[in-house]
Length: 89
Image: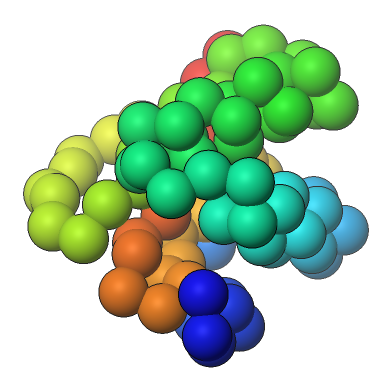
């Protein structure tokens, strides 16, 4: 992807966790091209690193209304792809 700098739209997440999510998203985009595969990679990595249960939505067009665990929500873009990532207890 030409411009892989994340553009943060909304967040409720510690800076270190946010930085890790951005890094994992960049890695996912290097390894995968299919949105479902990008989301699967991110979910598995986040579940392993920060415990269960993470939810990851990746795409160019979607609506959402979610409830998340406090301190574990982020919504950002990398290029044309939106990333909605959050954890539930």
